Length: 100
Image (cartoon, rainbow, N blue to C red):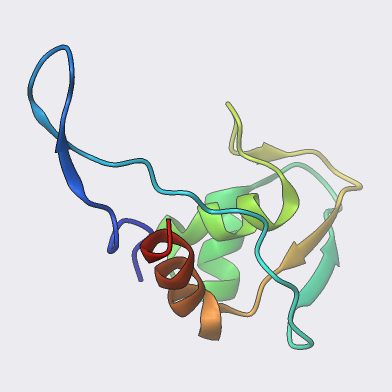
């Protein structure tokens, strides 16, 4: 799964180098199969993704669902988190980014 699969290649206005367009991941919709947890101590988003999705690179799914990840991968203890069900995430990303 990739959040960049629908990103378009464009040229940077200043450097003229090729780059991927911005990928918009708005708040992921809830699903009855989402899991809710409370962190007991400090946790890292990539470690949680590895635990729940068996893929540490999907940390951004948990971050997006919970408004986290801006500048840090750490989640303090005592925070309630929603772990989105992964099955429909890629189709949601494709829908959002191809319609803009």
